[in-house]
Length: 178
Image (cartoon, helix red, strand yellow):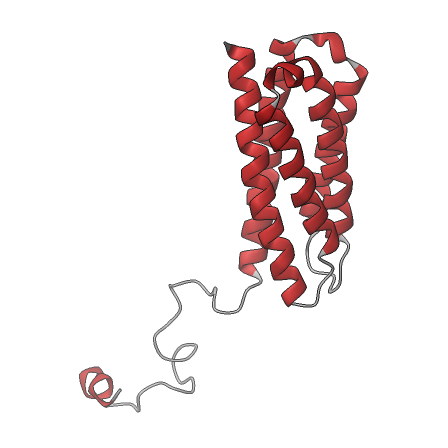
């Protein structure tokens, strides 16, 4: 039961990840950035997910190698995606790619470790990979225009700054003009 659930979970993850990665590739193409690694990664994810979904018995036998090669290829493509112009703070994307490739190589080194060990490795990988991608999301969000903290002053940068109401003007009067 655990192995069948693992195969179906993997299939669902790959299909969903593939769709979102292709969407990210389309957005990169619209911004005239390098998009082919993201698009190719999405196609590889969807293909691997379909194989896992439609042939679960074969996939169960080949699960170790399927996950290993998927992780290695995804890692390489993520590393390639990290080095696209403009050179924004995307070292976290490269780190996620390195983690993915290392995960795949470790599975190839010890394929007979067993399905239970693979489930634990996959869980550890998913946790580390998720943390790195969350850090990347926060890092990219900080660089977006309009992402200033909500605690900035209502008028300018402080006392006497441009945009402050003139001294002696009631704040209520200034707010009604807006």
